[in-house]
Image 1 (cartoon, rainbow, N blue to C red):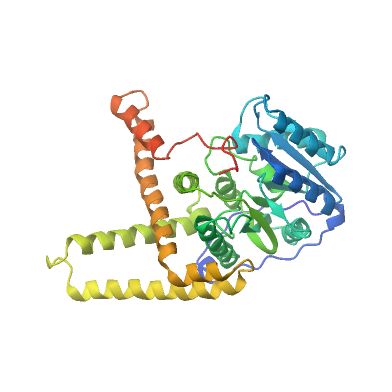
Image 2 (tube, rainbow, N blue to C red):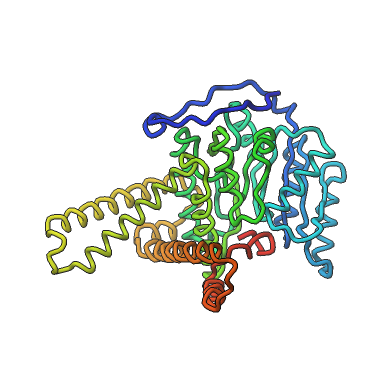
Length: 415
């Protein structure tokens, strides 16, 4: 059984142009020590179904469900944990954290227990508690990971379980289709996709041990650990034949909270990255976004002033329209790969307006994250001074959905 290899990060100009082909490695799936960790604060019937499916469809898997210090006075929740444990008394373990540790802390709590009480794991699956899988999802995911010793993690294809609830969930279903396409396109470039998402990812045990597990106190532990894996020389990829469905926010307030966490958390990962090559896709994305924003501002405020020559303005507008046309054509082409699509999804995509409004929401969340990052950096720099202005700013940003530490498994459905 392969346990991985020590790698030295190596990035050059070829990483932009020629995808890396991972050398094939021999492995035996039947001999793999496979563990799954499901952190939860508010488990549901979906959590119970997930555990049952993992046990039923994967004979060698051991499942750890980590109760992240849920309130004990909820009798229905207690009964649900009993049902989960009863799925298999030999292959399901229920752990409880001594205090609420949030998702990364709950994952590390289980990792420490596994290292102390079980054979050295070859593969560790991390899952959200609201994930739905197919019969062959886990096996295909694990086989994709073990197929090459250079791979440190492989993530599933992310799909939306509650897509048909309302317009907001349908928009997220279309968005997740794009996420999957981007991850597949990034394979082989700069050690692979930007993020091994938290809903379902298979980690090589030796790789996860090498980087010291998950960093606690971070807003998006999946992006952060992916960055450290790449910095350590591991590659990552997405498995196209390993689908998994997750429950997405159904209300605008929930979606806003999720996206402010994603956008601000992503900025902090980029800011703290040791090797820029590990987050190059994000760096390029921020550069393009800010450059476009700057051009729009310049054109807006220089209109009729002669500051920007008319020819330059026309070129910028033409490039923007061409970019829109290319994006629109690509989105229509992607629909052929959207197995859950229906007439309403086609109408949303063809009309453009709902997706434009959706993108404006995310743009607002990102702009707010830039401002909050500057504010948080200044506050940390002057942490000895508790000014009234800093206190007011913190309260204002918290009211707008921005915070540095208040997210985790305490937020139902793992936003």
